[in-house]
Image (cartoon, rainbow, N blue to C red; front, side, top):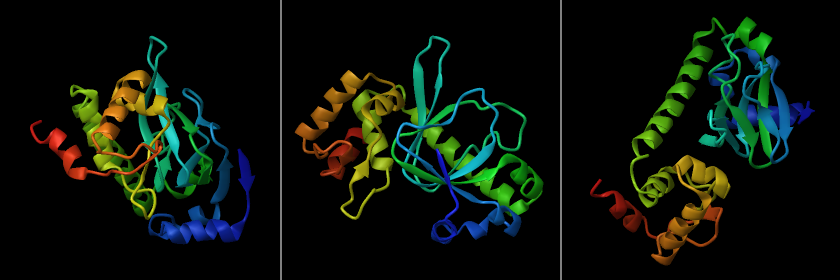
Amino acid sequence: MRLLRTDKTLQDYVAQFRMTRFLNENLLDHLQLFRFPVYTPIYIEQDEQQVLYFLVEGEVQCSHYHLSGKLAVFAVSKPFAAIGDLEILTSERLRSNVIATQDTTMLGIARDVVERYGADDPRFLRFLIEQLRDKLVKTDALQKHQGLPAIHRLAVYLLSQPAANADGAILLPDKEGLASLMGTTPRHLNRVLRDLVDDGCISATYPLVRILDRDALESLLADL
């Protein structure tokens, strides 16, 4: 992790994501800019949380380990998102591992600053509630579809993802992470992806994939 103090760049992000909507002047004054190279751990399960982050560029993967030792990915976050919002105002240790899956930029505020200037601020607290609500809805949607065949779960996921560029392409996680999100194996995920490519539903350009036939993907879910 590299800590930067480039005020112009930091202020550009604040303006881009309209962060003055939920950060008061004291919180804004204590914002710092962080760069995380790909595969850098950001949070480690059971550590004490020291910083609340705001994801402004890149991608992070949230996961935890089952008692069996198996790694389970339960979320992939892209801009804009708060990272660490669940535990920041509690004494609980971190419940998940968070790793940068791309070169990632985040803004951050130290825990003691959040407690001092944010814990009693209604706008800031409302923002945290909205972030937690959005994550709960996405997690609930994935869990509801866990009983479906992998191709249906992947169709649901693809149809719910925002475009990553002007060409309409979707940037997917690495295959191991996506397989864990889908509740399947990387080998089976490869078969499902190949089937969707062969059927003309998506492009063969993983991880930057274009939906070529949205109607065909939606038809997979029509009778569910």
